[in-house]
Image (cartoon, rainbow, N blue to C red; front, side):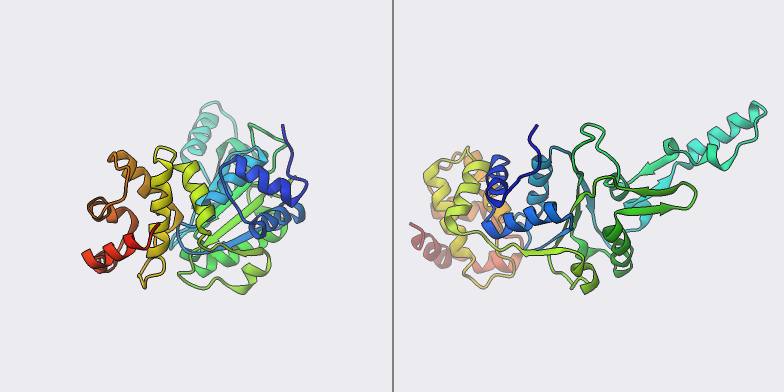
Length: 297
């Protein structure tokens, strides 16, 4: 089994093996996050590949991805751990029935601990104990500020104290990838503990490579025209420009409809795959659509 990459070039090559086409700056940030055992903080527009990088990194490390999806009101019971109270009560009743006096040690054992993603990231991967765990904390900007404060100690020491159980410390610090769509500013204290990288929209030739790898069912000519059309859309003043994920979905949708060449009707019929806001859809009248098609080679 391959170990972690030994250089930036190897990081680039092995990400490509997992169908992730990073630029050198992003590959450098990932390589350093592994080498320095630091969390990696990724910002960028939705759909540019932040989450996909974490998935590719898990494949690169030979482990399964642990994912914590953030939302308003996220607490430790959902993110870290909670006790399996029904099983504890059952164990208590069985002990009483057999005449035993249950102790805290018997009620607060590992088998009664429901491990959530943050705690799982501190423990070895059962399928590959030697691999570094990869934890994705997705869309941290959707969580509350108190949850950010809770993460500070965990990310600094890669350990957590459970009052009834003890301290759980990672033998090998996990690779933590945090993403943000910048719906709000994340506190500087959290960012300072991380390596930072902005992910923008890829160049046209890179996006074409991504689409070819992710939507091979669309022909090469259709892929090239679709990518060119999406890049033309991104020059417009849209409320939400389509990301790479939308480009991939669009090519798959066109292929599913047996479209082999872009034309005004097929584009009009499938615009809802690319644009997710009514105001943006309303801007794409027949003349605008024709201009965008004319600007694509």
